[in-house]
Length: 93
Image (cartoon, rainbow, N blue to C red; front, side, top):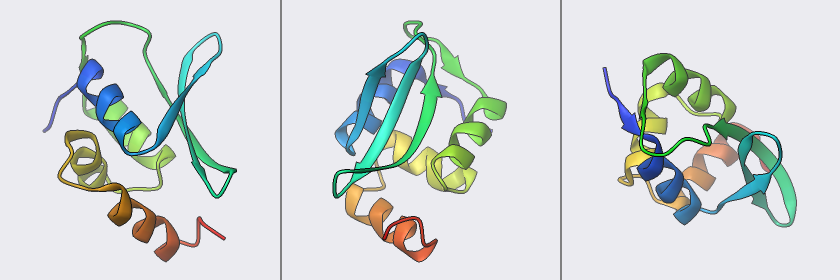
């Protein structure tokens, strides 16, 4: 069971092209060709752990398996590979 640090996850997802939105809650939005493709929610808090239940939820929101999301959040997966997966799942047009 993986545990992710929220601050590292936020930083790494932003490096992959996710953008923070300023709402009541902190959302990360992913755009492709100027179109909003998906979003996921992350806590406002500092450096807390994201446990398995939240990892699974964020993975679903990002259209990934749990293991793929962990790779995306920890950086082995590059933006280009993420875009390939989204294309394979017909999430990009």
